[in-house]
Length: 195
Image 1 (cartoon, rainbow, N blue to C red):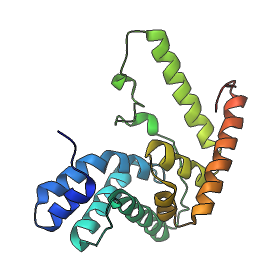
Image 2: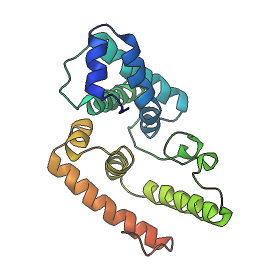
Image 3: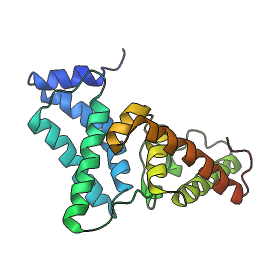
């Protein structure tokens, strides 16, 4: 049985089926919280804004184009972060600090490894992830956010541009520069086979 797409679930919610919306929250809640944690200092704030993003959509019931629910959700969350910082007068910065605590579907949690049969390989995989996070922290905030959305959230350039409120060309430039900078940082750490 194939998974029901976002547009179908959202349509069912608009017709009054709240369980459809619960499915969307289960589908995107953890990943959105992790994305929000990139901007915020605490998991609690990230969870609060994740819930608020979903609540805004649930209450307002906006018209969302076919296939764009995830992008709309992330745009809503991104805007909530901006509002959060305007109120608190803190600067918005996308950071990866604290992501090692996350135990979601991304595989960052060692307990969630797919293959524990080779402990040396598992340790090396964990070390590579630690190095990548460390190197990502050294590149610009916008490049880091664009790379995160593209590689970890598997979003299109168009969706990332919408979320970050910049042009398609700017996303292309951020990803190109971000990949180059990340490769340079990885080489500083002794990883010369990054592509």
